[in-house]
Length: 290
Image (cartoon, rainbow, N blue to C red; front, side, top):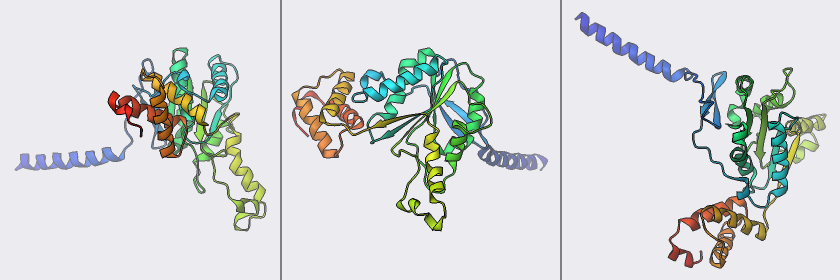
């Protein structure tokens, strides 16, 4: 009878512990600093966990087309940062699929051997960004905090944490960390016509506008990206086909143009998607245009 009671008690105790384990934040484990170049920061309670990414998606800068001007400025800023000279946080904005995120990912390929590391942070995890900066301040590497497709809607307050982390905290900015963010919105916040006349009867609408642009103002370097023309699109296609060991011959050229027309978009992303499809086809399938 006593053994049966003890078994029942043990099962109930285990059940309670399992449910508690699901509620508690996971155990914090140090990432493999020596063998990892890319990480993802995930919120856990009031802090977070740095997950190692063993196979980051990166590639040479030479793979990217039609963004030479933006690339030169981003590379210069990054090299200043790696040389421990003054450098800026960077906001990359503009048309979708034009290489904003790809440029940042390609930096890792070029500069990982020089101590550059990339940390991806989702906007919903930005509330714990100060905890991440505290962790990184103790490290010798140079870190880029990468916020991809960043934008905030009315009522979201995560942007306030980012503002403070970029410039505005009483603490000194961490010397070995920069923030590179991409967005389709120049000011990262929605802007409305009624902002100019005072939404909800606001007496000083200009102050509301100032609040909306104050986040993007924290980025010292702005890089703008524009839709590709046909030649730029085909140059991007040629680069990605070369990555698969293929040439942009007349057949591939016509197919690439048809691909872009079907999607109503000429961009680096469209070029990469076409190259994946084209490289995956059998040779006889490439003779049939889309």
